[in-house]
Image (cartoon, rainbow, N blue to C red; front, side):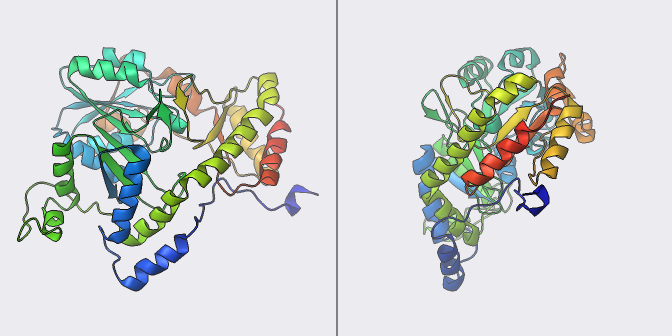
Length: 384
């Protein structure tokens, strides 16, 4: 059968969970579609159970959860926040929005996470926080990072957009920083189209976070009958997720185990099926250090150079398989140069891997036949 006659394999297709359409219908029919409704409460309870977080708040996006964390840190213009250059823009922009300066650090060549050994040299008298992104859901070296943060009195914010369901030495990702953020974007393991969450450990911080999330008011307390009227108490914005989206998220969270089992099956099939080809052609596969439990968020390959990265993507497209590259270095971006600064030792590893990385299709409804097609297509590429 020719590639043209085969059904194209998309890079991603959002999974529709059991009860998802039913819950959506219930939410619309019953008329509670704004934020903090009954499905928000159900989804929040499930989220706390799955993460072990004492306090969880649904937000409109992971970006908004990061913006809330910047507000909660009380950042002022000129403060510095250490963040990886190999990350999504929100890991930096959420803090730059408060006038803080993102200080971009290089990543490790194995896990592609922030290089913990470079953090201490980047700390100055203006440093207020360390932001970590668990790339592909593989944990950063949180024990080392936690000790550095404690030694210098710095906050740790976990951008856990990739890591929901992952763990580090038996603890769930999202439980190591004072604050952690999650993404429920359509590309994530659990999704509601657009959405996110803020996880908070400290009850006092959670109390203020609730106010910030409600436009700076104690409106949530009013609806719980704790105050007779709500007032403007703090700076804030409208970060509440619609209950329509929370209805869909509830169904996704209820199906979390089944979603994860299928994603891990795909990830494992790629890892095993591509091992010999990768070794023969000098291609690197994902590294998962001992003690790290990954959530099968994405599967990537590191080609020898940019030409082969582009060559593989083109080759796969010809076979009806959509693949994608990923983050481009934030320190070299126009806004990165304008609003941030690069650590003195630069980000050479980030620049190198950003040119070489290819992500393969990975979603819960990718069946065994499609996975076999992807493996066949990849192994049919000859690295030049």
